[in-house]
Length: 507
Ligand code: FAD
Ligand code: SIN
Image (tube, rainbow, N blue to C red):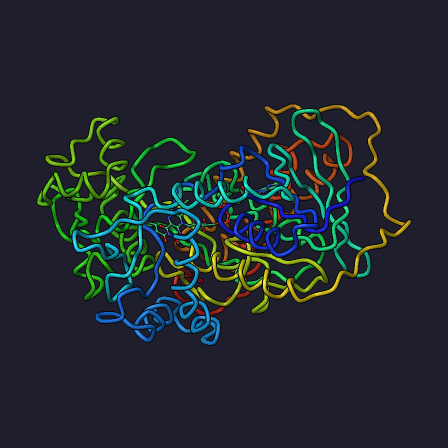
């Protein structure tokens, strides 16, 4: 059994930012970060476009950013949360810069602000097309300077320890030694990110398996708005499943057009904002176009953009396209929508508290009310920065309550059990991903959702049994978690009766 004051599960922007702040506030308290892959592996690391922040108050204003966020969320945002998050943006940006994060500037020394779908102004602060990598680097370097933070990589948290609706810590598998540790913590933060690998076709890295939300659900935390899955319109077309390379929306903000195979700029038929309509509308329009034409993909045309300028702004996208034989100066980039982000998740209040005492959630696994039915581009990093600060501020003023670990809590039962065949797990995961793509994708219908629900219930029983009879391994528990996430998405899609934002259902 290991005691820590603050147990943080996940090392993306949400978990790391909170860790740095709380460790600095309480140098004599122990802060432990467990993370299931390398310490920098996260959705954060792959963020391209940037952080939406009102930094140029001449052309832009909080009111405009608030209005864009509310329009995008299609009536389901919590307005007071939107106002709070947007007003805090500049302070959180200043902090990131003080921590060493570098953002692109113009020749006049001001921040170079990009534009993305749904934004009425240029307000996206970025580091070329590798903003997430830069943020992750800067925050991790702060983490490494704090003596009271321990980072345990390749440690997989698979269940929370709950007693009378209070979180006492978590069970964690050391994936190298296969030991299982009982972490007793005063406060636990879930910062486990997204769910992309439930769909297979996703912009998310393989760590995105919804673990934190599934763990919280098993602990009976409130989970909401799981039906609002965001599909990014422009993932590089690749017929195989797995992680798809993202072509940032900032490329359309830079002037690129979407075209059908025949060259038609179809977005102008769907929305007066054209290629820069919000993501839900662009993805749904592409989906319709592909159904009409039976084509496999649409195209992003950058051929009219100055090449030198493009390479300066989007060096990674340029190089990646080149590596797969696409010369963006001459060729259109084949793109399709792919799962990208989850708008709902573990319900938290304005201080990041979940419905379970001493359990907090932050970042993509949380549901704050900022995004409503569809997230405005580049509002996610902002949300994680603001809420990690809110949780820190709350806990900086909260006394410790969990100091006695109850006798009733026991270590995980380590009796000898067989290891489940990984082929079985891989095959089941592929079937699950196909089911979710076919029955719970961009456009859904009532009967497909009911069929998916029945299938998922059956798989849930099967896999739950396996978790009891086989050794704890990350691949088995990730599959278990993915099935739980699938059930939540399907059930909440069945329950939603009106189409909003990223949610479209026909009966
Ligand atoms: P993550 O960064 O995903 O971190 C989750 C962490 O939890 C990881 O370290 C993971 O290993 C760990 N973890 C998960 N499960 C477990 C477990 N069971 N045990 C232990 N550890 C666990 N948003 C923007 O605002 N602007 C952008 O430009 C932008 N671009 C994006 C581009 C791409 C390709 C992608 C995929 C996303 C993008 N997003 C963007 C979304 C944004 O990056 C994420 O929503 C945000 O980074 C999430 O941060 P997080 O800290 O909540 O989670
Ligand atoms: C992108 O760069 O297109 C992704 C931005 C986001 O998800 O907010």
